[in-house]
Length: 184
Image 1 (spheres, one colour):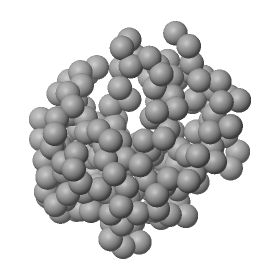
Image 2 (cartoon, helix red, strand yellow):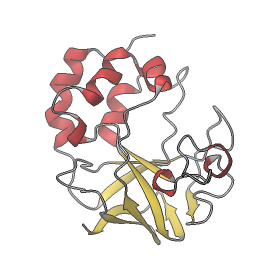
Image 3 (cartoon, helix red, strand yellow):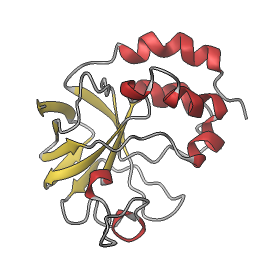
Image 4 (cartoon, helix red, strand yellow):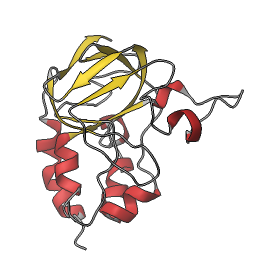
């Protein structure tokens, strides 16, 4: 398996940062019915109560509230298309990152501060303060350089691994939609 190098990541940073500031086109939608399972539907239902109905957030959330319930701030993950294309090189043998939405959008804190409301189809999402630093699986699948790049000095505010969001208005998102900033 050939991973992206630190040099290639550094060289690609200006391209990643040049993503649209608003109305980012959606490249893919991902539904995860179980661990290491991926489906790529044309649309997804997003709800406040269940996140993505049928996905594991409700029963196996990696972040929980004090009462043991799943943390709603991580119901939906959005990964920048340009980062996905940069790190996911072997699409035959390496799993898709699993992010709910891959969209060509600048996800930096400067562009999408915590609390920003995004329209995704008929659903509304709120960008959370939870930092997506890429899990152990990100490093195993895309390499140590890809993992280190996310948290390198000056990079956390760029949110290269994307944003985590809470659903604030139920709705449906499709591949034909764009991610649109509503406020924030």
